[in-house]
Length: 266
Ligand code: GLP
Image (cartoon, rainbow, N blue to C red; front, top):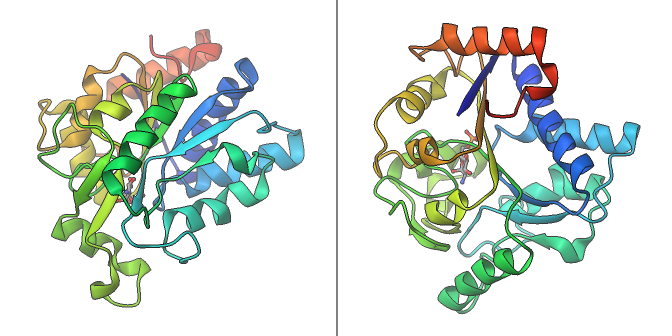
């Protein structure tokens, strides 16, 4: 794992976008795994800027989103499809045919989940997966106790996740109780993973996930088993890490001696 702690949210977001830009320059037809939530908004903003000002090309890119609330149509302003349109897809030259967000209104959920998994495989697998982390350690909507081998499926959200996400809905009762989500096993098959976290509320769970034991009780901890994970944090989210000084030293020395290797696990 490479753990990078930047001072601010803007610096964190720019670095994450830069890692994605490198991937797209290396392979213009990259398959991107994308996340929602407030954390990656700055990264998407920077990618939009790179597209508009520097011509970063998304025309051959294929995208797969991690998850979607059950029952919300893409037109619902709290659906993850709507979120992605607003923050990224409407502002870059991605081909709409290449966009995949789980259908929250799928009629046959199990059949849809199997199709989603098959579609990821058919496109050659995810090259780079962006992740946030939930307050209870979830990645996508893999709540505590999710099998570390799980695949795309229906998940019941925890009370904590419903409370965390209630701020986006008029009333707590409106927050969907279920979601379709890629599994932990699905996520682990991505060739590269970037996990982002910012703000003081994430400090404790980030430390548990990165420096604690690997356990299905903290889904994000399984990232310790993946060979190519870059965790990019702001100072607040990184404030409870025991080895923060070491991670900061690694970043400084890389920047000084091998800047081209920042964001590449060494
Ligand atoms: C939701 C999403 C996750 C996201 C998490 C954190 O539960 N399913 O993919 O990582 O929220 O959200 P935020 O970035 O707003 O803290």
